[in-house]
Length: 236
Image (cartoon, rainbow, N blue to C red):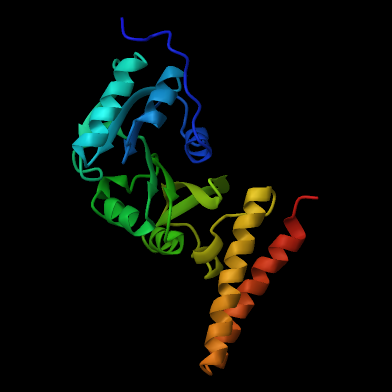
């Protein structure tokens, strides 16, 4: 028997938050799985009924397969060589985690899988970069961010979103592009909002130097809206 009693590892902060947003008893697809830490952890906890650990590269899949065997979850977790969701069947993916890659790459993956546009599915998205572009795409294409939380790992602050397809939701305002559903109710959320506020202020100051007064005022207005959120919701 291969390591059924091996002590279970702990997930890092990013993957732990992603795991908390996966629905209990779901069929999971983990895209860009690398070592398959997330599906293995969920399977060992009995939190998913099936999982596909998918990656575009054979190397990560080999490591994923080794971890699946090491922790004795091959009856729940399988590996799949797949570019995004191309080789995954819709019935295998009720909850889809895409974590640890850029927001623009996530947009490409979502765009190539029209079967995701079903309200009963859940996407858990954790972009490393370009979260603004990802949110803009989601809002434009009829996806709705149900929950969004910030998480800190290795000196950086990231967003994790739980998303479903819901085209009849009201149109999002422009501030959504920059902060999504983020609040200042946690220290990580407060840090995320502060970073976004400073980025908008920096952009506004750059525009002022070029004489683009109206555009600069627009970005300062967005920064001021974030400041209001910080002051009204901050933890004590």
